[in-house]
Image (cartoon, rainbow, N blue to C red; front, side, top):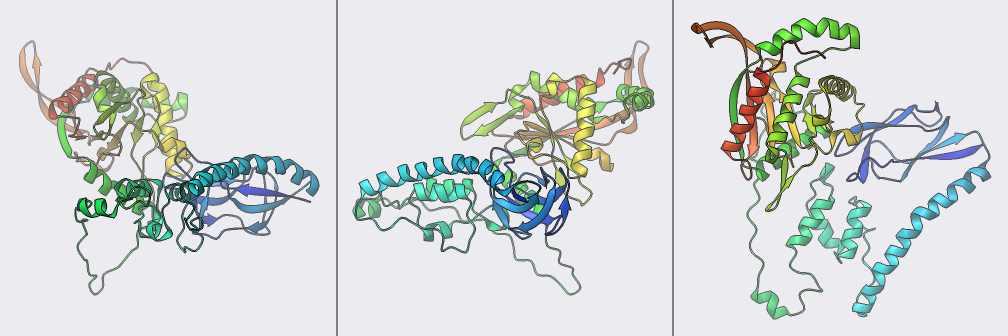
Length: 443
């Protein structure tokens, strides 16, 4: 019998590690090809790892809750075949992965010994009880960060782990580098500017009979992301009401025929996506990001769809290149993403690279709301409930009062680059597109 290693797969450009949340199969269990064997969680998405082969699990190398770097072996399967053949086929792959790392380590260490022969032995982070990803360790080693310094960095990752951004931010503010501070008098004469005091939440005490529920991993990530967004972006929200009577009548007319023909429902969401994409083409500064004092105008229009999960949490799958799709394509993509989001079947890439987000308050009968921007985007559109209301219509015979379907759109935007005028023009364009919807349109 041969052995086959199951490794932690690569799950996107910025994902370097994942947490094992639940083993679906255990030692001794037989698995078929494509059977899910473990659930994992990253800072981006929760997903499952399927087995690429048929076999029996003979070893699991990590427990639930362990954080594992991408590429690490997490389980070993016993499969049909010859051990020697299996080892021979796996050997070149190991060499190919490890050799560049060894060369890179040597090239990084040689200049260090040339610079200062009196330096102590290379820094080791093995004595720490704290987990550091390979990327964080490599950055720390390259920048000559001591173990004590690394331990002092406050981590923003899951369970307080130090992320790439954490150590880069530390290095940016670091003023006591051994290679930079060669003159003690200069260091004393130029003290580092005082950092602003960190904002701390008020102390909260539980009372008699109160129930304390610890946030799960996803809720903690959502909480941290929302706080970060409010700290980064000065939020402003604008509102506009829209007469969507033509859209409501059109959907009521075609929905049964559409479901019979396509085998799925058509909602109002694809129509909002289509209009939002057209308006973003007209006002590209809303489809943007801010990097310091630079404005990045996004080439692609990738719209995120805030989706409530059965457990009460929230995830935002992203529909890519919305402006290149027709209404039928948008409808099928929206339905697919929503269904797989609720069933925890999204791939990491499907919640990345969003440039704009739409959230639907109306699905819970809310008239409107003030959403929080999904960083690093600069705007988020909220769709309110559609309600019948009396409205004044201008006709050739004069003004009349009629019953119309009215909806409120609200948009929160980053006031660093989106001013009230631009936000108002974008919302006005959305209103025009939705109110001029062709009630005879075919899909």
